[in-house]
Image 1 (cartoon, one colour):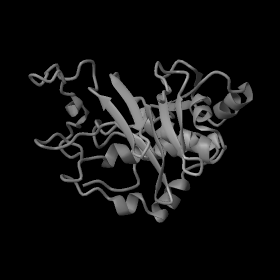
Image 2 (image 1 turned 45 degrees about the vertical axis):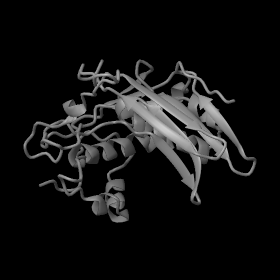
Image 3 (image 1 turned 180 degrees about the vertical axis):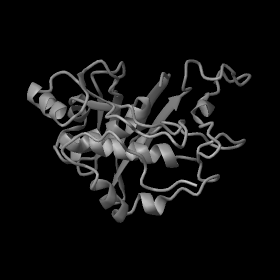
Image 4 (image 1 turned 90 degrees about the horizontal axis):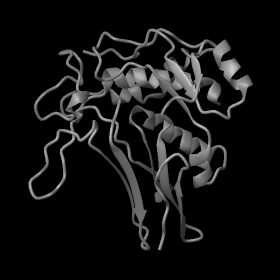
Length: 259
């Protein structure tokens, strides 16, 4: 499945770059972006060669300090939380008497006056804080996060694919090898910017050389390691057994604990 995963990611991030904005300020074309018809249009752009020239198909009028935490209690309540000041110590301002500092994610506005994500007073900026929560048949199944800036959408999909499609348990899903693609257009860029090369595909060591060669033959610029592949932690609930399973992957200095 990883043969085309990089293409899926590049297409999705070009749409994100052009349409991400506070919905109170911009009429985001959700109906079009989420439609099966648009998905079919975008799918036609995926072939056996890496695409170099991409932008959104819908017209338009990375350092950080982040933690992820999830918790659950005996009554079945589950919480998924990501906290991030964004860059360094955030703004450097601390609320008197609290010890909490403000983040500085206003840096993630675009300064292009025609961009939906352009700076405006009272407007929420683009951000990459994505605490995950999985439901099935109306019941909570897993609170999880894979912190790491723009890697999070890729990381979340990888975790869910490992569990749902490959049958891994929650710890195995986090420890399995990861891939990353960088170089996509960002919501902070100018509206006229677009992806003009293949970007960079990074794969953790342990993947067979045959896979790497196949990707390179498709036109992808592949490197082994030397990238950030997120930091995953989770709590999964087994409703039949009435128990929780916790996981903290081997790449992170966290832990899974119960009492």
